Image (cartoon, rainbow over the protein chains, first blue to last red):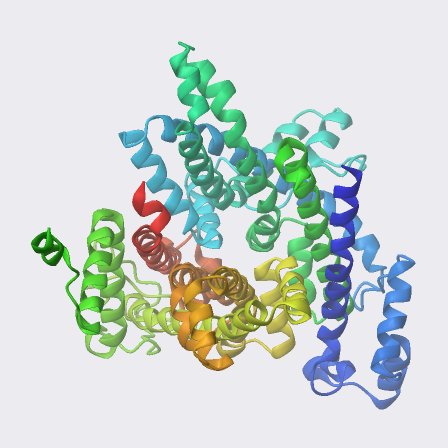
Length: 335
Length: 305
């Protein structure tokens, strides 16, 4: 097992270096002057130009700049935002819990609905439930989620008035960050109604973000389950006279879950892309919205480091998924 | 005995006959999937609408009727017969804009898939055919691209290249290309071991001939399926970029861009938000349905079961 983990880790090193090169070079590959580019249409005075160039190290050779960048990166210095002047890492860490809370809720919704639906659709293959749920899954899979979010806002916020349109909690509540998760912090604060307010803010964005993963998980569970149900050991279990729920629950489901766990894990990339859109629609103060805002403000140090952090995060989660896969499926480990 | 042998002796078919038979077999399996046929029909209609846009659209997509701002669809109170699906905030006809928008979506899909497909096939062929360090270097680079969430990488690329339709298409194509490269490589590697490749090699076929004439045609099935799936993702992602202000720029009637312009009116005028999104959903759904059918018809593993 240790060798398995080590080999996986070693495999990540070139990918990580590649990610740093892309994140680094995206400002540098531009034709022209990065300082002028950041200044945008307003332009920049010659003094300010020299000052910025020196500050950002653009007066050195590109290769040297890359090593500078890597050196600072390894010390945990990801540069400062041009707009807020705060360290990028601090900003990232303060916004990250909001995105994690949203993403976790989305993946929980997607799993809790997607897996049972997939299992049931497989057991009742060809039934109306199978057909309706798989059609719904295909619609969900094809959904432009930015539009889906707007529709839900029209219906639940506009017509029914049940949910707020934006933010994480009503402005009338204020309490200190303990965990960064609004649902937990609102309970800790003990303020009446805070938890409900946080929940009402969270529900629509979570549903929107969960849509595509839910569709993927339901489809994947169904096909994994169908494959397993045709296996000899399931037939054996049935032949032994085992009740249906044991055959499905113990023999089939456990084996069908192996690819499903991977699918769930791999949704993290989908969630990050979805978070950009969902957070923009619901003005959710997480890293997706932060990246979009930074791109439109031409805050390139933030874009650069944010890109790096998100890619590294996705990479680490994919590694964890790989390792879990090895844990629950001994066949992989031995190979 | 002799008679029997003669009777079952294979009939020699011409190339054209074989091709017709293959298409017939493909259509037989494709037709079994009702959803796929519906998807294909909707997609064909979409293509038709895109080509006939100047004939079908009642108005120009950019003409602003100053006396008809945010007119609701015809069946709602205040609707006008001149504007079937209503008008947007500056008085442009929604229906005409939607019709012209189909040109954008199809154009984006075709361009993105073509670039990603050609690039991915060449890169994947090189990696699979030569193996060794060439393969290693290429696949590590592909891994790096795949490590980024696709929409984020496309966004950043567009931010670097400058917002606009062309740059959005290039960015999306770059992000999709590794999928094609990986698929091609895997298919090439399994085909390389086959006898017919060895035979061609022994017969003196050059590298280029081996790669493009001998091996590539046998790797096409998974690539076609991936191309369909990428087509629908390209429509979705370009609409998302348009929605975020990084794709096609106003006043072009691209569906995602239309949604972005409509955002501030969501609680006042439902139609400016609902129709463009519905158009995106229907097109993407039609393409995905077709893709599912293609996969069933082309994947010999599923065919048997």
